[in-house]
Amino acid sequence: MRMEAIWDQPFVDFGADALYPLQRRTMRRVDGDCGQELKRLVRQFVPRHPGVYGMLDAAGQLIYVGKSKALRNRLVSYFLPNNEEDKSGRIVQSTTAIVWEEQPSEFAALLREQFLIRTFQPRFNVQGMPRRQLPIYICIGRPPAEQFYTTRRFDEKASVCIGPLTGASRAARAVEVLNRLYRLRDCNSSQSCAFADQMQLFDLELRPGCIRLEIDSCLGPCVSACSRTQYQQQVERAKQFLTACDPWGVQQAEAKVRQAAEQLHFEQASILREDFLAVRWLHRRLCDLERARKKFTFLYEVDPGREPYAAPRSPVLWYLIRHGCVEACVKRPGTATERRSLGRSLQQWLAGSANLPVPCLHRPETLPLVSSWFRNRPTELRHTFSPGQMPRPAARSAG
Image (tube, rainbow, N blue to C red; front, side, top):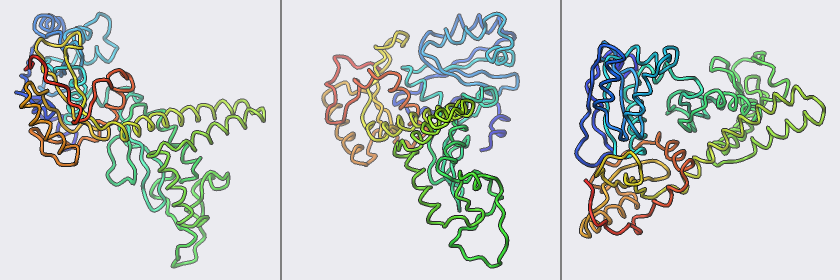
């Protein structure tokens, strides 16, 4: 469904939550004629618990989605005085109703928010977000002479597509630098390619579309300056940067800074340093994702009792994470019988069979979220385990 089509439809409901294994939580709503009335209703009815929220405009369209570990606190902050020029103020000026849905934990709210934004594409989440905060994917693709590039959506045609990440400006700069370092083209698809080992029907004079071949920052596939094999070797090397945490690109960017400084080209060194920082930033993010893909296959127990704002008797949930991606969520078993039954299903899940009491999902977009979650909260890794190391049943089962 196109984004415009989604915006044109009045909002009805957030829809099912495939990562909540119990009875669906009810979405609540308040309507107000002005900001002050909405603020009063928020204070009166919205709980101070984790959850997601949405803003609706006069046409009933969902214009913004957010999450919070304390819903009331977050929503009240939208009504601070003198914030008319801020994004929150602009959202409130367009809002006539607020909807919310409680979640058992901050982690659950993060996952739900990500799903809702991807599903509904609310106007202020997309258009009103600063460029640096917009999600972006880093890709290698666009044959016959592949290159690094960025895109706002997952590109199924790319040879490699990593993301989503946040930091569009730094990502764009890093991609520009990486194409130079790996000597890959950065021209658009209208520029034809003719490899040296490619038969030509006519003997035409080929002209480069830029000066990068002349300054030795591109292999020049547009003018038959390299063979297809030579170019593909560089593409494969570039893929190692994206998928295998290969540091070569970072090392080369840093070496260029040192070289310029040693030659007393300080202005150039300053520019090259910004190039290096962008490439290093991207490399670190990619290494985080690679670490998650390699090491993050486990169950993650999220106990709302560890959170200050969780609702009473919120369920303890186990998130099934494979290669850093959330695939399913189950309630912690409350009895030894439940534990044995679930244990068998989890062993089958680990072996690659989706024989679970809940849907098994394919959500590659959760990889950066999971990676960031554990990077910022490393102590949470203490609450992860394999199916063979399941914790003993609790004295009581929250539900």
